[in-house]
Amino acid sequence: MNKRKVCIVTTSRADFSKLEPLYQGLLNAHDVFEPILVMSGSHLLVEGGNTWRDIEQKYDVAAKAYTVVSGDTLECMAESVSLGISKFTSIFSSLKPDCVVVHGDRFDALAVAVTSSLLHIYTVHIEGGELSGTIDGSLRHAITKLSHLHFVCNEQARTRLLRMGEAPNTVVLTGCPSYDRFKKLNMEEESLISVCKSWGVVPFKFAIVMQHPDTVNRDSTVRDFKAILQFFESCPDPILFFYPNIDPGNKRIIKLLHEHQKSHQDVYRTSVKILSHVPFDEFAILLRSATCIIGNSSAVVREACFFGTPAVLVGNRQEGRDLPRNVRAFDSLASACLVNVYKDLRGVRYAPHTSYGSGNAVDIMIAHLAESRPSTTSKIFNDACTPIKVICTQQTAVTNTNGGDQVEEKVERISVAVDAT
Image (cartoon, rainbow, N blue to C red):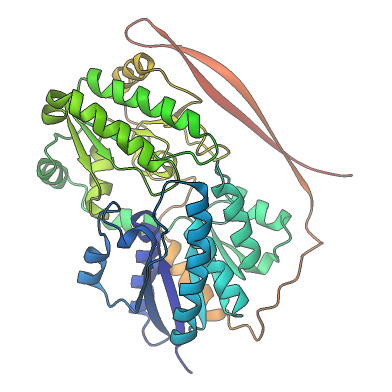
């Protein structure tokens, strides 16, 4: 039996945290698979932390695709997709993979899926069927329709893909592959203390902040970021702040950050550390050790719940995602409110939540990749799915902080019913 050439395309540190466990699994199954690693997107950018260096120290990289058009506009994002299609066309034509694996909902991931689909390469999508705000939500569903096999993280995502007409035998519930990696990490007290010390913090006495641009609500991006900068001035604990991703609007908020840093040098010298990249295993340990994580990154919703770390979700960038019980969500946030919420969460831990998987995703993925040897990349629309109504209502709950202030939280109530019409 010929080995299957499986091309893993990674475009950022965020997606590599999900793709690396699968890539390692494919390497271990070398009698069946020939895994190929391609790097692109923010991996190759200075502002992305030059994360390609870390990857090249561990693995052989078959190709690099420089696809990000410099700039801070929506036009640059659209042109990056165009450039990506051109670059991936050359790479896939040269490597001739049997299948291509793509993750998530990013514009650079869309370029991968468009190219592999047009070249009639079997395309595998990880984390389809989820909801997310901004343009990413639309891109995720577009990638779904361009893909042939779907590895989803929860039953709600699987249901959505079936309602989108995907054939049931192509939609596989696996859970999140990064959870496989979490389960193998050393989370003993000595490990937590050692990693935290290397980043200048003490376990359970610091905050992580990850705030990215919202490509749809660009004014709210600035408003929320200003509130976070003011929070820096009043937070009682040190803060590890991660640079925003490369979405349009990032240069504007980076400028705000540097202006604030210049006018509050004492705060940044003593309390705030700005980071462009932390190795993923260390980031996971920091997330496990943080008092809470604040911002609009998907890590606020997806990764924090695995450790029971309190999370404060700011704005609408993750709108529509299933929120675990450790997440407090706010449409907008004043800095005073954020300080009170943070103080209220100090010392609080939640039970680990497995709504996005339990840590055995890779074995399931490997088994299905080994079995799926299609003779064609043609897709059919499945009309036989049972329509389902998902009803989501929003309520406002008021809680009191330790300081006596009242804080409003958005609470979602979801009910599911079969549509008999």
